[in-house]
Length: 457
Image (cartoon, rainbow, N blue to C red; front, side, top):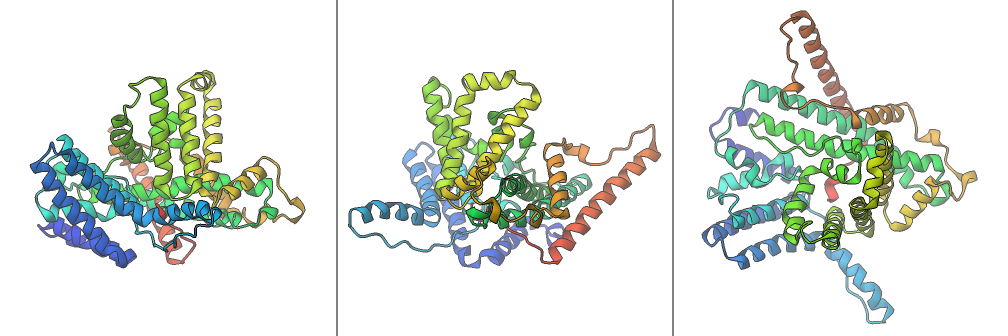
């Protein structure tokens, strides 16, 4: 940040440190990231020269998707093909072991949106290679989003202003995100992982529900925390990244949930898949088909496993049903009933998302329903529900649905009528943030359990 502030060559500095950042975590795949940068930069210029050439756009999209398919899905696809081949006695394919590059799903979608937007005429191709590479490799959003489309920051690529307000706002948002990730998500991660590692015979109804609710809060605060840190860092550098979460667990329907959860991914699928397929313009059957296609792709985007597909299909079915009788029934419920319906479905769906297999998901769901196979052999709940976990559950449940102010309202605003009260409020806000920062740094420095959920997405 010091190098960034005290130089005129801010894009060059940001690009350099972004490449260092990626190399620090994934040196082996740094050439892959550079290839994505060079290819999309050059192909964007080709598209700009021939904007009506759909074949160029198709090739550009296929190259981006082809690399994603190779690194993320080839092992899964070959494994599925080997089943029928083995049944026919026809041999099998060798399944390669391919490590997943950090953030490949995010910068693949980023590259596709850039090329499509040039083809549509929504943006001008960036002709400066340093400026484009800076956008593509920008470290705050590189490996875990939000998905930042070029057109959302194009006006700030060349020139941006960093005000004292914006810097303070960015620091505050970064600290809040760090606390969400380290103090809440990480506190819940260990018991969740321990319970999911148990044999089915040791599951109880209580531990299964603890794992399900714990993961529901863990994945939200993990991902929302990373997003807030990224958005905060962007503000410190003069950029405005799009918001990624808006209290999704306060939603009143699954349709509403998807307007609030991972908003940049939802918007990406809407603009580049759902609407091009026809959206809701072709009647109920076409709309249902398009919704299911989107959520099948959304499920597989998160990972190459049947569990992710099942999670996507469940949400797709819920959205289809809410366009009919189910939606009218939910709308007639009192608001607490609407929230209960959403939370129950979302929690059950997260079990599919977290489980290592459909078999394990079925075992956890069965235990949650009261069909735990071996209560006498079960591990007691107290082994996982200590004071730290209990505090994280309570605080996480409150903060997940609490209203948090946006924009300038994050910063203390002094009411003219009471400067003394304003000063007290200012001190309370800043002291609270300092405590969150100190506690977060202490936890990180202690080497406590710190999983990174979205590394495989």
